[in-house]
Image 1 (cartoon, rainbow, N blue to C red):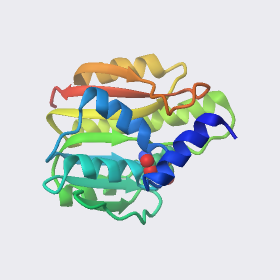
Image 2: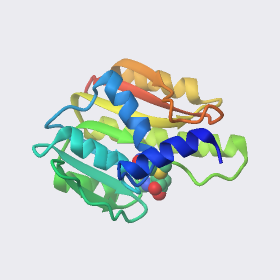
Image 3: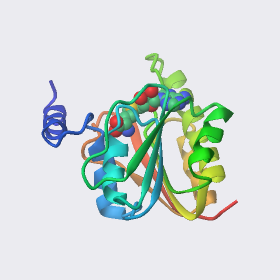
Length: 199
Ligand SMILES: C[S@@+](CC[C@H](N)C(=O)[O-])C[C@H]1O[C@@H](n2cnc3c(N)ncnc32)[C@H](O)[C@@H]1O
């Protein structure tokens, strides 16, 4: 077992988060403060729930988190955290937007840690990831409030630079983040868009 996995896996267990991926959000948030107290957050690909739990603590009781995943989430909000509403649906379906809009018409922040089912074929996996991240960007255009923020996992490959460019067209500032908890050998990186320009 890798040392890095041990460290973040144990840390997540100790701090009672269901997945080590929570630190890929925490590190970026500590640096760029793109989620604030009282914010509304939409978390796409939220299962098993670590990002939603962490975001709920950051936004506090006056905020709200809506988590969407193909799978059912069983995590409950922690003390002092906001309400979390879980939606079991694919982000590719129009029904998802309808379900989300019944809760909130628009959000201050959209976060997405989606992972496609990998096949081992590098090109196919990259393309599959690009379909998901492009969908999150389209959903950001539909569901973010003006000046809102976006933080999304992507897998680097041929189309990745073009995707970063597309994020830059919708947001005033764009950063690429590679958190310490993300394995060096992994092609995953996180794209942060701050200041949604609006539709
Ligand atoms: C790495 S996990 C997310 C971990 C989560 N951020 C956490 O901290 O607990 C990726 C998730 O993306 C979800 N996913 C993949 N494709 C999806 C889709 N089309 N719609 C909704 N969720 C999807 C998977 O079911 C999986 O739970």
